[in-house]
Length: 415
Length: 105
Ligand SMILES: Cc1cc2nc3c(=O)[nH]c(=O)nc-3n(C[C@H](O)[C@H](O)[C@H](O)COP(=O)(O)OP(=O)(O)OC[C@H]3O[C@@H](n4cnc5c(N)ncnc54)[C@H](O)[C@@H]3O)c2cc1C
Ligand SMILES: [Zn+2]
Image (cartoon, rainbow over all chains, first blue to last red; front, side):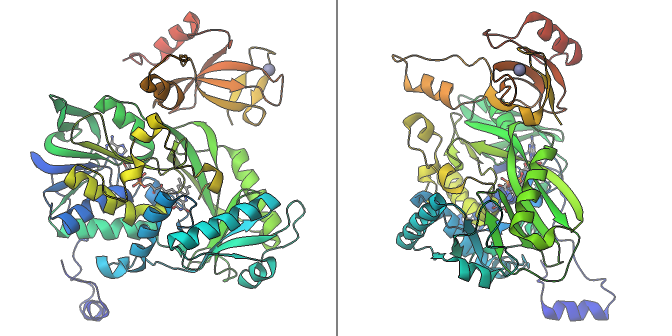
């Protein structure tokens, strides 16, 4: 792989850009692999990458039914933060956030990580107490956050209206090293690095069945033929239930639509990410100048990548209250993704009832921020067959045993 | 926007009037049951890509529960029916057979 650099840009500028290589190969599937990963979203690609980088397993295929990054990885609002309440969450999200800090260098691909700071507004007395509690928990976990007052909120984000008609801003949980990154670039950067290690990324190839022998996974059927494998990693977000059924088990997951939208581009007016969980909306400004907007998920099962209009209306109403200057903005694009929700709003990284078949799912409305940490932990689980410290608490057995990692109270909003 | 006719009061209700209640026809397990049974009842879900039977409540209307048969891929509604049953009625099953041959797979 030819490295990207300032020198490479200069060189190509002098030769009419004829020398750029394809970022990744598009091979036909081989007959068999050591590991097959289903799903070329961020989590699947990161799993493959760390299998190669941390565990030396490179005879790997990543199988994708559409195009890589075309699922939720290319549909999210790119918020990165690690200010979670529970210790296992803080550990894996902070691992991910810290890997994001140097991911562009590690992958030699600009993922545009922008640690511009994330604030979660407290707009009720209850929220103040909740966020103060989270700030204390974060201090113990080694995650840098701070509870700030309304004046600091206004300083950091002048376009916020502190005395909104329904809910005044009473303070915020502030994570200065949270922020955003370019979502497509995360998928593309991992894909390029995987391809460079000799892994096969096979797009437009849908997995239609999972084969097993004596309780152990033996291969998959796809629209491009059968593929044998010793180990299988299912990393398909909203389609987890479909793949689990193929493998013969059920999951504590419901698939629902989550939507986002962006406005026409405007001059820079906001250089932090703001989440307002009580009124249910969040916003940041992209490098192109668009206001990137998200809100709540629908409440019913849906595979259409299209959500309810009234949810978008609620989101926009809440944000106009919080940021009156956006009231006349036109919206440019609007889309949905299918997110995989667990009851405790925490992910699943787990062995499954089928031998040598592992699953990574349940990231729901908030898994973009987790991609590097999740891939790191999943690769360890697949390579060793047992979870390491980052994944240990996120097993499927927690539902049977009542060991929930309850983040539903702590977040309460799509994030 | 999803429209469901509430079989209790007959109103063709818009989504904003309704509250979703999740998978229908789950078999409730009792005190003597195994952990695995409770896990199945409380957490494990079919979450199908296709025909789905679910519970809804006419929250901002008559307030009562009912059932709906719906496709999660097209959002087509096959019909709604009473909450007082443990399985979908025959006429709705036949209608689904007609529209989605082989769905019982
Ligand atoms: C609107 C929206 C906003 C969001 N905002 C944020 C945010 O601000 N911050 C944040 O951290 N998270 C956010 N998220 C959540 C985040 O996008 C997801 O948690 C994350 O991208 C999941 O990545 P993934 O790799 O697991 O899944 P995906 O990117 O969905 O990848 C799964 C892949 O599996 C493929 N697949 C499915 N079935 C098959 C099959 N049978 N065979 C082969 N391939 C298959 C799919 O085509 C897909 O490409 C948001 C999500 C949405 C929808
Ligand atoms: Zn009614």
